[in-house]
Image 1 (tube, rainbow, N blue to C red):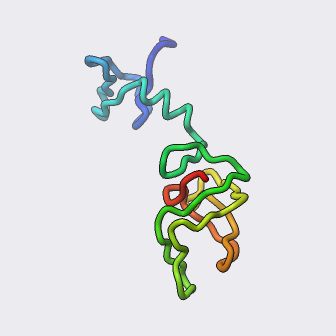
Image 2 (image 1 turned 90 degrees about the horizontal axis):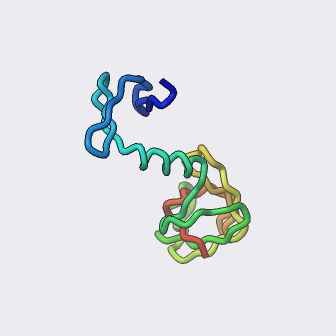
Length: 114
């Protein structure tokens, strides 16, 4: 039974096809196996707000005013940040230095590739 598809939610081997979806008979979770394969291929990659893949050393532009705790002013939208470092698996997955603010961590959903 090497062709058995395990449920991504509960890891049960008791799954069956229904139309173009797979269904788990244990937890009744439904998923598209083609979508699951594409998500697995993107695992560990970090994307900007437009869906472009980011790399270490890229330059990005902030797309929204971001309040900074302890600072009197926010990081303004349109601020360009050079030479980013990526931290996969972290909530704030970009490390960078911003002029006037210093070192900080940003979320990739608030930047776009420059």
